[in-house]
Length: 283
Image (cartoon, rainbow, N blue to C red; front, top):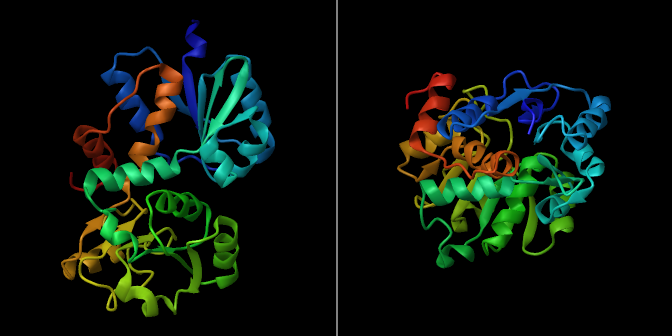
């Protein structure tokens, strides 16, 4: 295969601060593969041209990030099941003369929790339920993942309750929409809570008060910069179990690398330390 075809990309608008090239570059070096993973920032109008370049063999495929995931869904030839359920594609590759697309966000979310907090989804916790803060694209993948793991109910709390209601209707039982203000009313029975909003990226604000939550409730924040968000810091002070968001980023990258380069990589502490150093955090 020509050298020009041994390339994969991350596309979105913008993609300047993406850590994905560090992740895939680490795996390429680890497996001694002659390939590259590059940032290809394009506006939505240019996405079709980039995908056509994949079809022509100029790229092996790539990752798709905000705000292009829904547009990518409409542009690929074969939509795989995870993407069908979400209406969004974050990973594309060329095979059998067609452009394939899937979504690995839910896989990354679950793999991170399985790795960092084994048993977090044990059956007795299912009926206590889960709480998802936010109703954006990341919340969609996480809601489906929690349903797949048997959590019931799955509460969706959002400042704009109408958006939460739309997701509850779309994904059906056991989803229930509530306002952020009303989340304290269900908190005492929650076994798992995840923040999918951007609140906390400033390092100052937490999306919710934890006073009403049981001490054994696992708290997860998908934000990874900063790694220790105000929500996680508050949970640690209360001796509550926590899982940060970095592992979701790392694990969701695994299937794409395997599709493009033919090797299934592993998420290791060395890789985690590499990204933590880039974030300016302590490994």
